[in-house]
Length: 75
Image (cartoon, rainbow, N blue to C red; front, side):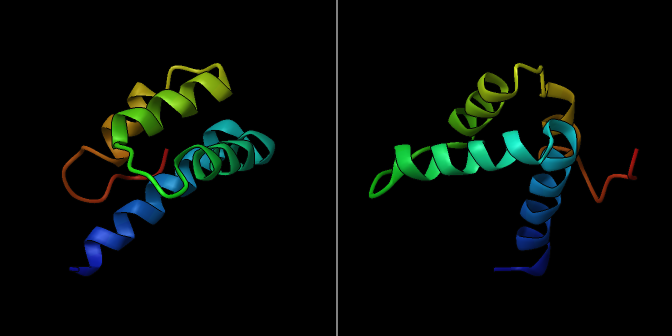
C-alpha cells in the first residue's frame, strides 16, 4: 500500500493509452473487465490482451514502465 505501488500502475496505463490510442485502450479495458469479472487474472494475461487488441509488440513498454527500476523518463 505504498504510494509508488499505485503510482506505477497509473503510469503504466497512461503509457499504454499513449501507445495504442484511445479507441484501442478503452476496448482493452472493457474486454478485460468483461472477461475477468468475478474472477482472477494475472499480468501476463493483461499484456497478451493488450498486444492482441492493439496488434503491437508492447514488450518494451511493459519492460520499462512495469518491470523497470525507478520512474522511467518519458520518451
